[in-house]
Length: 150
Image 1: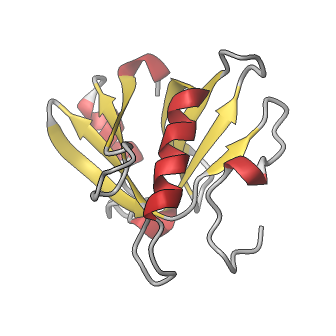
Image 2: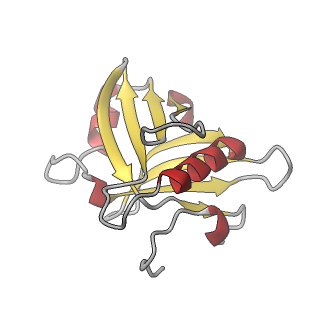
């Protein structure tokens, strides 16, 4: 799936927000491709347990950019990818940390995939892994719930 089919918009990342910080992935590509990526081999929609969220730096400078992605946990295949600036992802992580509820909460942030203004998929998540431009995990910049072993 081409990254230029997708744009990333953040909402509810302000300091006073009482709603879950949200990353909205607006998709403008072929519908059948998106539907295929958001389902498993049997045609069932991927649920939050089968989707991983990550950000991988492409550059390590002051205006750092990277790739924000959803991946199918079972296959490792990318579901949706979008080019993003690191500052936006930092804002999302910071807001999610402020909103982090008890360990039994469904999530501390949301990821929504939309097409033509309609929500196609939504996932409440507690984990967002951030990697440097060489593929090493940046624990201090990631959202990793307590008790999770990587």
